[in-house]
Length: 433
Image (cartoon, rainbow, N blue to C red; front, side):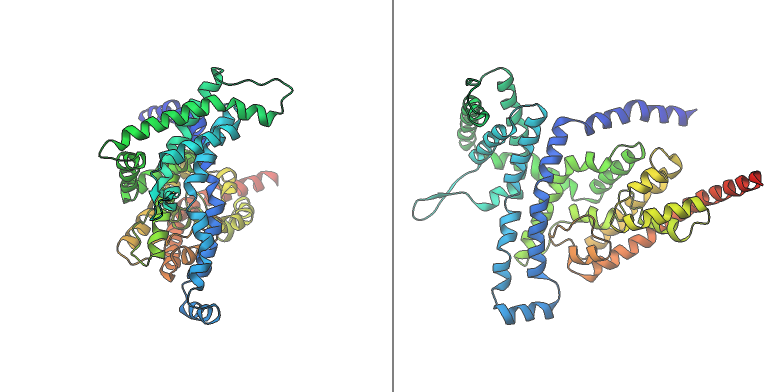
């Protein structure tokens, strides 16, 4: 009776809230806006891998051909991609949010971009010229970009819906009409941000980014880079998937900015030759926790493919093994299934939590190298991804250990399911004779 009540509470209270969160226009805009930065980060990471490939013989060979500064020159594209993360985020978030309100997204994102730049304190060189530090456009300004992208866009949309715009005749081209429609809301927004900036500069905080960093970015960064923080995030991902909600989308929508910031900090430290400060990054989850996909199902996929005795599971195994090597596990989630299959709840939640724990301890004790700031596609197969993301063989070894543990955890539950399926097939064969 107690189990039924608990199940009812989860189904009636928890899952609807999670579903609403997953479909929230602001969370979707945040997720999709941040996703826009991923291709540029991957491109920058490729150049970084070429410049810093962790084999000394390769580095010596490249230096002998192109000179000592070849790696520095090669990383120009890395700087051009990693250091515009904030710019991409504010444009992407504002664009997607305005689009969800059916308001001209280009105009809204341009106004938000202007508001974002207005929050950044300027520097002055010896000649008296003003300039903006490039670091203010990367992860250092990411939280400012998120807040501006969300709140400024909401304010812009509110003014548009109130018809606080300059309307042009229908004969005027849409591009011109939209630009004039943005004129009055844009003026109000920039004037408001300007007044806020002047007020903040009169305080000990001195700048808007300093306030956001003090009250939001720094505390969240410290919390997320802990073992308990990583365990909670991973538990939510797996738990939501059991009920058919894309847990990774829900959690990453909130945590992606923090994990990308941590990855970028590792990149900066690695480039400067300093110790890597963060363990929990996007690479931590993509490459060491979610091997085979959410729930770390690569071990289960291999069991289905090579150890199943029932015809049904053998056939399924042939279909899921290939995608699992590239961390795609929808065929298992919906084909086995795992979604709404409470018999698989324990291993599906437990397995990635074990991966979080073993990897975190390995990296915290320096037995395993930390992610060096390279963002590689999440579809990169395990072992290869572990080596590339850390630049060290210990990363690949950690993945092998995790895969072995994952397979052992899933084995009991797989064996029980395979036995049931085999018995059903034998009974069906007897009835057909």
